[in-house]
Image (cartoon, rainbow, N blue to C red; front, side, top):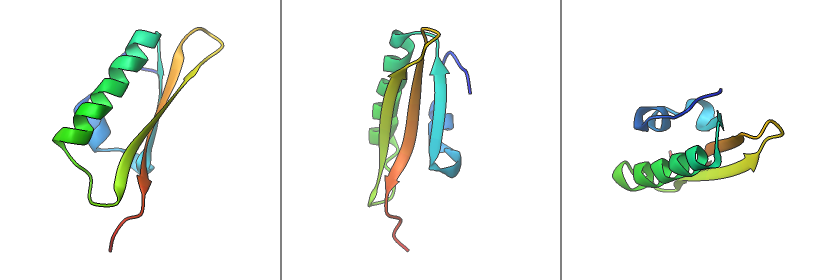
Length: 75
């Protein structure tokens, strides 16, 4: 998915526990990581689950940020 921004709702509704977004600049990628930090504190996941981010520079000059939910779900 290519986007200039994502929302809190996008993060709260992660499909398949993973979202990869192509951002146009490093500043946009950092802004998205900051949003993940906000969501992590404002809307905690169930115990045992955590948000994890990874950022990589793409050949076209943009950045890809991957946001995933890691950990074990408690039944």
